[in-house]
Picture 1 (tube, rainbow over the protein chains, first blue to last red):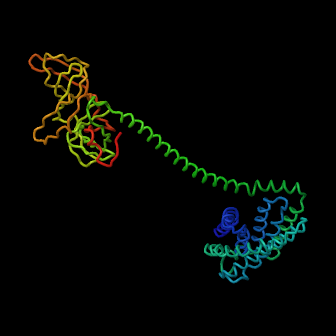
Picture 2: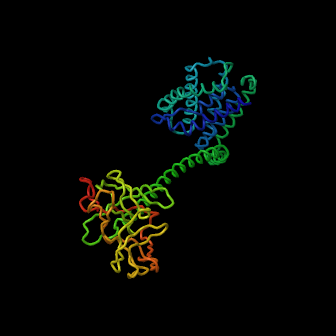
Picture 3: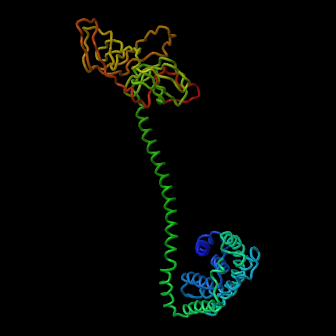
Amino acid sequence: MRLYLRLITLCAAVAFVGGTMVGPFISIAGVAPDFTIIALVILSLAAGSVPGTIGGFLLGLIQDLSTPSLLGLQALCKTLLGFGLGRLRGRLIHGMPLVEATVIAIAVVAHDLVFLVIQSSLTTESHLLSIFTRTLPAAIYSGLVGIPLLRVADYLGILRQED
Amino acid sequence: MLGKTFSFPLRGELLTLAVCAALSVTLLVLPSGTRILVADSLGLVLTSPYYQLRDFGQDILKTRDDNAWLKLRVAEMELLAATGERMQRDAGRLAGPALDPGYDGDLVPCRVVMRQRARFATMIKVHSLVPVAWRPWQPVISSAGYLGRLRSVISDHEAWVELVTAPDFAQGVEIERTGLLGVLRPRGDRFVVEMVGRDEDVQVGDTVITSGIAEIREGDADPGGAALTPRGFPVGTIVEASSPSDKLFKRIVVAPAASFKFNETVFVVIPMGTGPVSGAGGLR
């Protein structure tokens, strides 16, 4: 039970505090790490598909509240991402920073790809160019920032080798 | 550990995915107005508490910063106000008592920095902001009247002053109204004027001033004119005057004009030209 408490606390802290306070502070040329996805990666890799899916849905829904015109889109993207990351659990090499950074970067790219495709289909404008100008830099930045956070999760006993 | 305690069958995982995805799509396909209303309602539950808490924390930090800044400003202003008041007081004191016409002396303002610890203080230490070529026996006054005289020079900035209250103190005085001369001496907790004949005209309320007559001090090098107490400094007021039948002299009790308990700024009277040492600048 204490592990779940630690997991939820860490994910909430990473997602909310990181996203709203740390992110703007460490952004470079308007590009900030996606702390929500980092939190979702930690949650999914630690607890599996079901918590990852539900967590992704909730995190996305909370993010959607700031853009009501696309309510549900972030929730959908993160639901899919949480499920996918949860399915990856146990299939990754434990404790390799490069693997962890790559997983986070791919997660950011996959999330944004789905998001932008659906957004472009829902609106008249095309947002796909943002993949190169926004998503890729954010993915790299998130991967770099995610490494120490995953190490913290590992240190707290949230991530285990069998995970 | 987590993996063992929190594993679901694939069907359960897919069901969760389907439910969450369905909810998301439902929200996504809601009519625009309804979507905004739903977002607003959900926001009240999901995000408002967090943002309120965050804003509250930021407000507290900002308030603490503001308080610290305000306290600093208040402290600065209080200090400025206190400095202004002190400068006003000092300016008032700098006017000092008028010197006797024709006396070519000068007043050196000094701050009392130390007071001898005793039931009745008899010595004070004074500090001058400018270097002064002072010498023992030079008179010291306050704005109210005569205080005493320099006793020991420590440096050109500091010196010890012997107050009138010192047991062996004696000062030539004059009763202003009549010009009668006498000698002021401390006697216990009061001051008396001695050597005034029993038949002289002395009344209660008469003002006593310094006489300007040089005192002869045995065993001390003659300070010359540099230590002469000029005539005219108020010493006190006569509060009791009687002529005991068995005495040659009157019994005169004087209430001192100056306070010996509290003297923030005093003035050392020095002959003109011996004040600040060269290069120290003017005093007035």
